[in-house]
Amino acid sequence: MHPILNIAIKAARRGATVINRASLDLDLLEVQTKQPKDFVTEVDRAAEAAIIDTIHEAYPEHSILAEESGSSGGTADGEFQWIIDPLDGTTNFIHGFPQYAVSIGVAQNGVIQHGVIYDPNRNELFTASRGKGAFLNDRRIRVAKRTRLGEALIGTGFPFRNFEHIDAYLKMFRDLAEKTAGLRRPGAAALDLAYVASGRTDGFFEIGLSPWDIAAGALLVQEAGGLVSDFAGEGDYLKTGNLVAGSPKIFGQLLPIIQSHCDEALRA
View 1 (tube, rainbow, N blue to C red):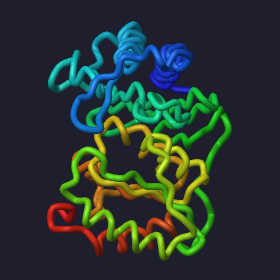
View 2 (cartoon, rainbow, N blue to C red):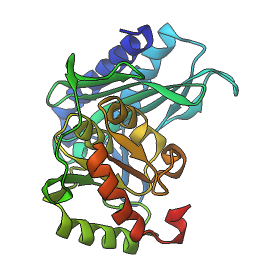
View 3 (tube, helix red, strand yellow):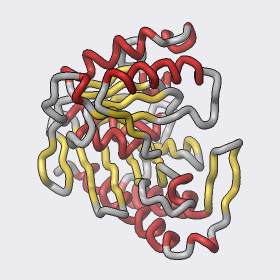
């Protein structure tokens, strides 16, 4: 295992320890609203601090891009950047809904090379390094083998902060509700992508994600044999935040349907 991936795993577990402690006393949790329907707790911040401390103990020169603290450390032209969501699924967490995770991606010269997603509720550790495959608790995982969209289970995420593209999204949702075996919206994009990688769902799409939501998960899907793109079919999803993922056969059927409902802004 690559040393950087080892540190990412250690950091994710440390963050999860903070989250697990707090989950025992949700009634005491102080919740703040960053913007409507977008919450942050002291748990997000404490988990993020534990993760960053672990990284900087090993790699003090590496830069960080984290959901709560933004960009820090390193230099503008630094080779390595760690992309961190300390608690993906905060809204689920504060309601006691057990679907949330720690997500850590590591980019080298702008390309994601390592990814870790850790689900503390199920003690499921998803890991990937570029060219080395994807794993769940040290067992190799692959995307599902279904070939027909009509038999596929597709994950998604509803727009919840920005409703600029809600009409386009609802058209996608309606079309896919008719053409698939079902749509699922568990509420944590990192885990949604991990589930595509492990074959629990056949595909996933969402509008307006942030880099920390998808950096690790996109690599997991690719290393498990799947495909990932933005809505234009290109690789700019970390920048656009619009993402489609799936096993190759399902991805090929999913993307054109999504594109057919994209408004002008989403086609960029």
